[in-house]
View 1: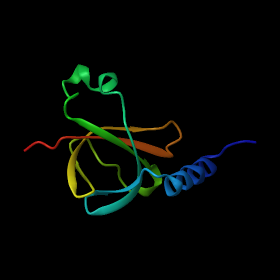
View 2 (view 1 turned 180 degrees about the horizontal axis):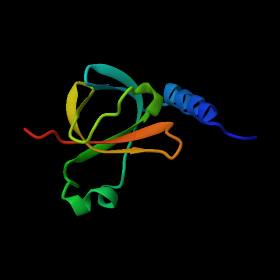
View 3 (view 1 turned 60 degrees about the vertical axis):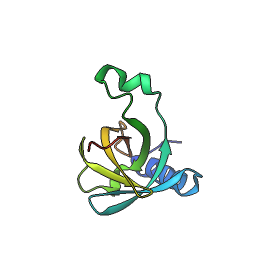
View 4 (view 1 turned 30 degrees about the vertical axis):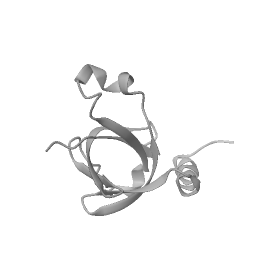
Length: 105
C-alpha cells in the first residue's frame, strides 16, 4: 500500500473530525478545525526564553490555508487570544503545527 499526499490528508482530516480534542481556531477572521496537543516546554522554547509563554499547540490541515499564518500573528481558541510562537509543517505539507502562547499586552 502506498501513501499519497491526498490519502494522508484524508486520514488526518478524519482524525481531526473524530478527535475528542477537536477545537476551532480563528486566525485573521477565518475558522479552522484543529486538534489540541502539547509539547514538552523545555524541548522547544527554553533556549528562546519563551518557556513560560507557551500554552499548547494545535495541529491543522495545511491545505485549509491560502497563506500560512506567521509567528506573532494572533489565534483565538475558545474566546482566548493567543500569540503564535512557532509554526512547523510536516514533510508532505499535509499538516501544520501552531505553537500558541501568551499574547503580549
